[in-house]
Length: 84
Image (tube, rainbow, N blue to C red; front, side, top):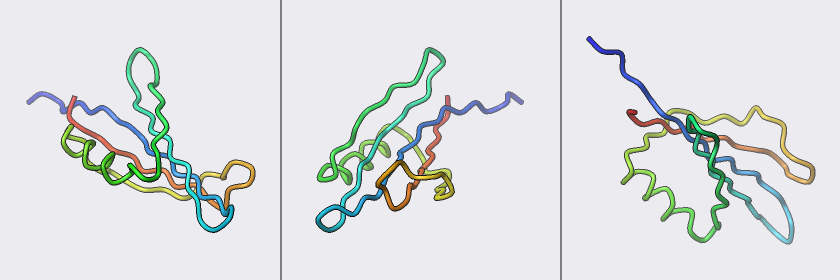
């Protein structure tokens, strides 16, 4: 039986509190040739998640244990995987 291979990507959500609530979302897809990084607009976040699902990405885990960048209250990392 062949070993299943996976590819991974991460959504990093930094939560800031500026004039109410604000998030900054960064999408990172890890590839053998390097990382592709893309900013995701807050108003398009739901559509972006739906696109990940259409592309076969499955949520594998969520973490909040990374230190946030300066000025952010906390950071979430959502890790997705799909068969490679």
